[in-house]
Image (cartoon, rainbow over all chains, first blue to last red; front, top):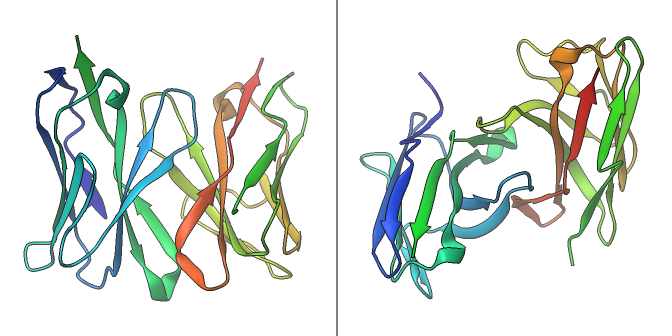
Length: 110
Length: 116
């Protein structure tokens, strides 16, 4: 079983839509969680960390459910510039390793 | 702060040659550096983890004699693809973590390798 699993999409949504991505992780010892954004042929860039209590950054909201071992990302009022691949990343601190999901592709259309 | 650079940004080489890719942390000391490979439409696959002054830890299935990693200082790690073949063509990305912020990794811009 993969460490991190994501729905590959693509999610095709109109501008202004709300879209949600989920990600599941297999190891309950995982301690840190992140969402990264990757544009085509570019390196991943940190979008936001995911905290146990959930956190929000503008139009983006991240949630963590440790009991069910999943992480979610909600994007409100989608913009064309949100089109990218969103990567779910999990870290087990004691191993200092980061595990990447395969990414979920988002296409926001006018 | 926390800028990571990679050089070269792209390289084309003939089959059988070796290619060296540099990863530098420009404004911080990197306790650990990671090397990833990404094939088209796939996610990043961790190749190896390296700490300054010690041997790199390779992921299962990654040939250490083919992908030589040297982490000579706290700001520089190099990946050498030896005897490159067309199937090694990929996007190679490094990342680094810094002391006191082990949970966050900072990515280099990547190196696109094409082997003819």
